[in-house]
Length: 331
Image (cartoon, rainbow, N blue to C red):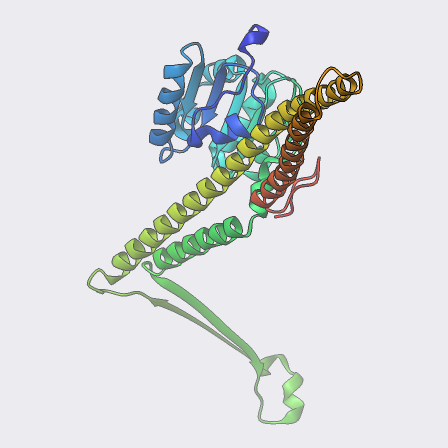
């Protein structure tokens, strides 16, 4: 790919992690997303490809990762210039992790988030120059946010309630026993014949509950789905805040560069005006005009510097309070 093709590969909010948090330097993205997120991700990908027809986006679900043979999976990963995995757990996560270790190119940026911890820790940003203050921040940084931690714990609690409701549908088996000594005389307590043993077993089951147990399971599953949706909403909100902070930071940096050049030009003009005034070539009103222009440029420059500092604060807050380079946040 030629240098002119190097740019961020943005596919909308659904793929914001690949586009906004990693400086993608290529036009091919391989992404593994959940079945639930696939429709919105496909829609975002179509919007991006409509304006960037030369790019290529390969979207797969965890089920498709499991169904593909090793050769096919290796081709998907080997062709990718950037790799994204969101909410991949269990066997798909383990298989993807193994395939990434064998087939991913060393300079391919990889971002795995919100899934299996061992897969998340493989996230890396290799190759290319850093394009901002996010160089080296771990993919798990967003988990520092209190709202995401609360939403995550709600999902785990709802999942535990589903398992509890499902277990209540089945018969319960109880086993109890006792061991003691019994004798008519104190001296006989130490004889083997005084040893008594009791073993009790019980099986309890509901013969007819009118479907209450199944209804309880369905109710808890609905609560779990609600918790999952709440978690997704919290995650998307956090990602939007990060992207907004990044966009503001990039805009103010560009504005700062332009204002620095404008302030330098205004300073030169003011110096030239004073020299011409000293030579009697212009009146003092012209000098005052150039000084007013210089002061205005310097004022805008300092205002932009203050805005840039505020942008950094917004970014750190959006990421949950900042991060430590080369160290993942504690769960």
